[in-house]
Length: 272
Image 1 (tube, one colour):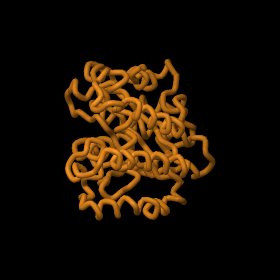
Image 2 (cartoon, helix red, strand yellow):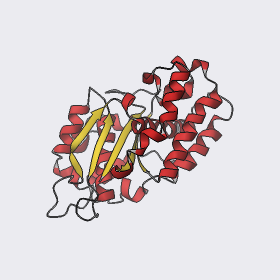
Image 3 (spheres, one colour):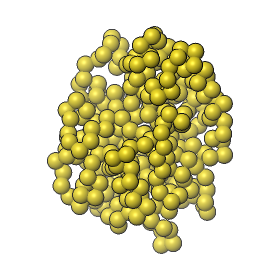
């Protein structure tokens, strides 16, 4: 059995915001049998917060990276070192990550059967994660691929996401090959669950991975200015680490042009 922790970066709500052109969802896929080691391995983070009197609510990627809130007193080298530690830990633990990327401007100008179901990029990205998990584990024997899917809380849309995953419409299921005996999205246990990232290190790791991919696309695709000299090189170095952990594009973005749901997600993937 697996537990997947997912979070997004770049969420802009129900209306396009040119300051947030791209949304990235990241999911960390972890074997449930080894998850108990997480708290021990990340105990350093809690000690660091206590030492520097930083509230646990400030353990968010954007706060750490930008040096906001309690992180103002912490050097950039130390703050960015937390990112390095997350990514090296992921690599050492052999976890996988699923990345869903949505170019938000064309999304808000699309009006078809799928967009009417998903409505906003947040819901589209969250459902994409569930579909990709299904494709990733669909061929595993018996219950070895069953996955508990946990998202960072999102009060506006979490009920919609849970309902769609629990009762997916047929057009969404074309994303993967459903066996005759399989339940729709049968690799997901029940539906999606939502909790606060303040209490989950792996949600914080997912948040960090999503932030880094979003910043990468902002700099490379959307030509945002660097916030400091050498920022793009640093982000590219982190991306190289994360890319080694990514679930293959053939699973997350299947090339099945006859299926509308596959065309849908491929259409909103920004090309670099």
